[in-house]
Length: 312
Image (cartoon, rainbow, N blue to C red):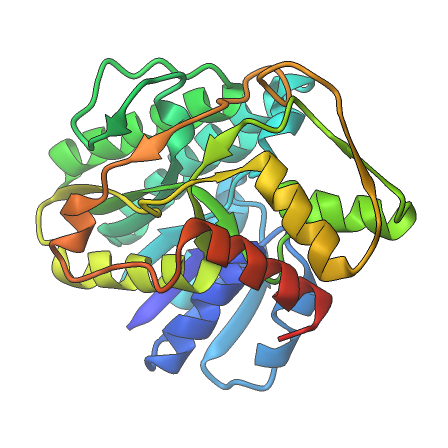
């Protein structure tokens, strides 16, 4: 299989490149290194079937060069602004990096006759909700620019499926944790405590509660859905059936770092404008394909902390 991974030098994308190469694919990793890091893929540089292309996927000419070289059979589109908080201050980030990037990738695929796309979506498309979220839940009312841009991208993918014969797999991610992370609560807590081991400032009141998933469990889910879901537009939720609070995460990081830190909460039920303080997925649909996470939400958080610290 000739595969393109946009955002392939990023946190999740680099792990996906690893897995695709392991199964025998020829992989073109496209990244503009805005959030991605060369160090995430340096270990792949000697693989004959791995190709890194410095590429801004919002630019049609750069996409054309990528597709001319790779002639892919499938695109795994992970390139995005994954730092939701950043979009609350710069409203153009999510428009460009989440929506425009998806539109340009779809147009390039259509020009070059590539009809299969995997898209990394998010729980943020739902906004504030109560109860477990099924794939058919609606209406969807995102409260962040990140969620709105991802929902718009999902809609455009649906149109390309219906009008141009595409096959698409949309996986709505939860909060993902693990080594190579560039942001997120676990990463932020470790960085903050590295600077000041006696005080940890936590946004909100610590009661924000969500499912966390270890990155390699997520990659397993991606590959399984693409392999087994045969409908033209396959939408699946992936995550954990257990939840972890921000307070628990902070305490785990403090414990694993072996510091004696006081936790200072900024207050309020949200960490920032657009933050969803709680959500819960129903994952029975993806479980019916044979996928289950290898660890609970809290176990995933602890494993990720240990991986980032080099303990495992």
